[in-house]
Length: 219
Image (tube, rainbow, N blue to C red; front, side, top):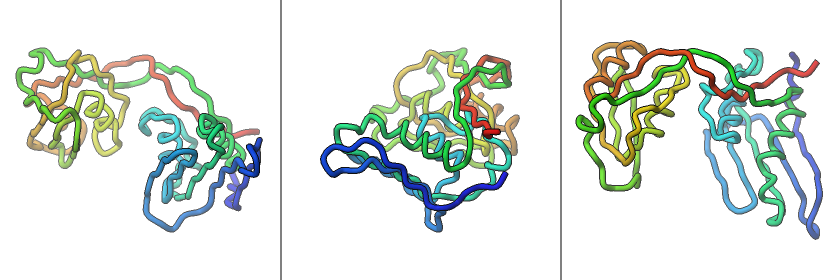
C-alpha cells in the first residue's frame, strides 16, 4: 500500500467564519496529547496510538494492517466551532480514513484474553485514599509498582505489548483505589502473571468475545 503523507485539510459546515478543520501531517516531535474546548491534537503519534486515543481503547483492541503499523509518527489535529465540538471524533475518523485509504469499523471477535479475578477479595491489596489523584503505574521486568489505581487502570496497563499483550477482562468485582507493589520474578507474560498472585490478583488465559476497532484497507 502506498501511503499518501501529504498535508490533508478537510472543510465542513461553518458557524460564522470559523472553519471545521482536520489535519494529519508527518511528525518529528515527541508525543503530546491535548484536548481543550473545540480543539483536539495528538502530536508525535503512531496511527495505532491515535486510533486508540480517538476510540478510547488500548492498542490491544485495535486490528491494524501490518503495512500501517510501521512505527511512523504523525501530528493529528482537529478544530471545530464551539457548537460543533461533539463532532471532533467523527471528523478525525473521516480524516484518517481518507488519508490512509481505509475504513474503520467495530466488530466482536472470539480471541485470547486474560481474565482477572481476586479470589481473596481485596485482602492482599493496600487501599489508597487519594481517590485516584496522582495515579501512576509502572510495569518493568515483570514487577509492578502502582499508586492510587483502580482495577480498570490495572487492566488497561496489563494490555500493553510490554505486559500481557492481550485484552484483559476485569472480573475481580473490586472497587476503590489501591497501591500495589510486587517484585518481578522473571520476564514475559507468564512471569508477570505469577507476580500478580503476590497481591491476590489471578490472571487466567481464556477465550472471550471482545470488541475491536478494525482498520481495513479500501479496495
